Length: 476
Image (cartoon, rainbow, N blue to C red):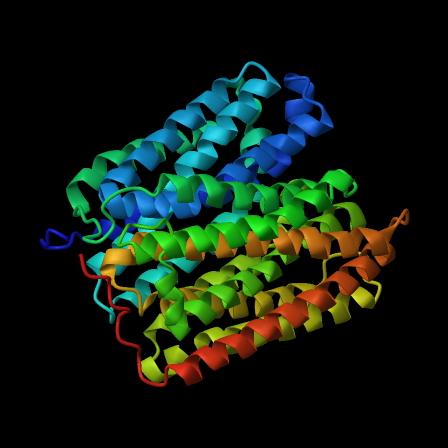
């Protein structure tokens, strides 16, 4: 139960400040590669694992992190996650070897997965349904800014070389943010936990993690390694592992236990279709990954200039994330569908610009990116609200972990599938025209993904013309 008290106006800043760091650290290390190779003697494989280690442990642990909050307390897990992330960031900054840095990044991923599902859970428990759209709008703003400014922040810190720290400052900036959030969370966040989740499903954690490892490792690493045979073997093995996991969770629920994943949540159309829509829509976010290649390798921009080219997109994302929840309830219901469709239009406009043979960043390209950013800013917060609104507070952690995992799987799928199409089309060619051709082919797939998400969300809205009643929790 939640121990209700007057909610502090600092609640959202305390929740979202460390979340900003968690998302930022997915992208900020992309610009550290030259420094890591020069100062640590890191190989190309080492640099790839500095990125992949964090992504893998983060994505694999989200469901478990959400359920741990349900069982042991969401504020407690939030604080453990923030403390772990802060310590891991310090270890990253102090790493004497590439191996030590990779190990610290693994710890960062686990800590981020312990913290992030609690943010969505605490919002679900602390705020009433009328307040949640605004909170999710702020969450979308924070995520968008973190993902689009990572290269600017990282490149700027390395260029400034404060106190001669070089790449280490990229991780040190997390420490003061983590300490302030850790101190503030004890004062502004009420403790809450699930009344039905009595213990952690260890067997479910083991089997679910195995299924995610089998699926995520080849998705994250397969393209970089040229899709070796083991990648396809792992992907094929992931399917029976998922089937075994589902069977295990059903049996635990039938016996009155506390499964890691509450499959009954999928009975609510808004959650079921919303989670699938999130998986598909997050496949579109690989657009940022491909656009960076086009700007830097195709147009010859520096990492910082490439990051600055994302600024209009980030501004549009921020404006629509904050402005959309202020609309009336009927219009808010249409935001995920309209936003996904608008993003598709922006992607089509981007294709038209890059196909024109432009050899520099033009006003037309920036205008197309604004449309993409505005559409994604409308779609993502509204989709989170649509997906979680039928979830009872007792299952907030499990639902948040499931939704976050769908988002990360969608992102990894997008990078793997669309990235493979991009590099296959590019081949050995170089130059702006070649990169523009490859980008336009890959983005055509992302247009289809955005439109598919819009159609799915429309189905969810029709299925729940009247907001669904919370899914009943099992009797003790």
